[in-house]
Amino acid sequence: SSCISACEKGRVWAKALGLMASMRRAAVEADVIACNACVSACEKGARWAVALGLLTDMRAVGPAPDLVTYNASISACEKGWEWQRSLCLLADMRRASLRPSVVTLNASISACEKGLRWPAALGLLASLHSDGLTPTVVTYGAAIKACEACSRWEQAVALMGEMARLAVEPDEVAFNTLVSTCRQVQRWEEALRLHGHMRRRALQADAVVHQALIDTCARSQQVPAAVRALGTGSAAVLAEEAELVQALGAGCRLPARRAGLARRWAAASNPPSRLFLLGARRWDVALYARTVELIARSLGDEAAVRVVSRPPAHPRTACGGRRAPTTMRDTCLPVR
Image 1 (cartoon, helix red, strand yellow):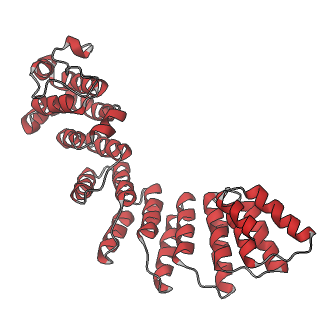
Image 2 (spheres, rainbow, N blue to C red):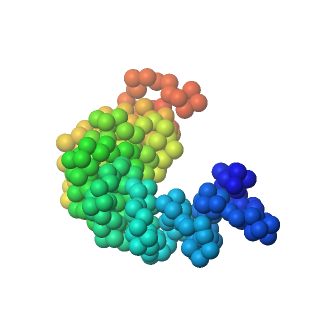
Image 3 (cartoon, rainbow, N blue to C red):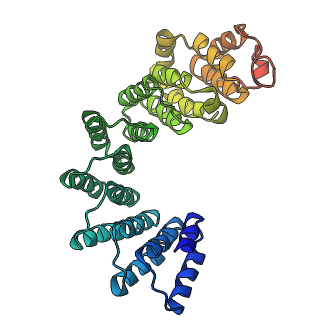
């Protein structure tokens, strides 16, 4: 049992199976601890079919599977995108008078998320309440991801409200998922509200979230909001994700030409000074250059020249100790 447990912790599922076979050949009866360790090793090795085979053997010849066995088996199905099998195992547990735990239902909800079965995920969340179990942030995170994967924005936001009522503190995963959901349904106001809540909670939005936030605002023709969102990214995020500005550019160039949006943008947010600060502060030449190109295309060459010719407050940047670009030629961009 100790050797099999060591293989399970080391994620060496094949060796765990070999040890189990050796025990049987030597007529040594494996206890439930050894069997569970073997099933868990298969789960960690993403071998759901082997894990279910072991579970079947335990049902047939013993020892009788317990909660740990089913938890590992359902987690194996979740990793293998086998949502139907995970639900079948959950039903088998109940028939065997085994009460599922929060871990069990979390794995089942996550399996439904991967299978794009958001109604099943919400049904499992409801059953968790009926079983007298307390959902965790992992539970809600999996359910929110299930709704997000199917573009069920209303259900996802309702789950966030339920979390607040139950005093379940959302984490970065839950917030990031909701912002991504808002991008799919073009709910830019809700995306900004959620992002602001993240900042007040000192939760870190990753590069994917900033991409989603900017893309949502830009595609909804909310260019000032997109520019503000661009300014909230950390230096590390923006330095790694210079293409964030591309979403802003793609979303606002055409509307600017068609509806005079560039003039409204200029009046609303004073973009030359605003975007200059982004260029001087973010230490990424590609990002700065792309931003200046966006100004040139949306507001004209004169606005772009004003941006790059304005002296920075801190002339030296973290980009190799070089100065921020101070002329249009320094950006190496063809101004159109």
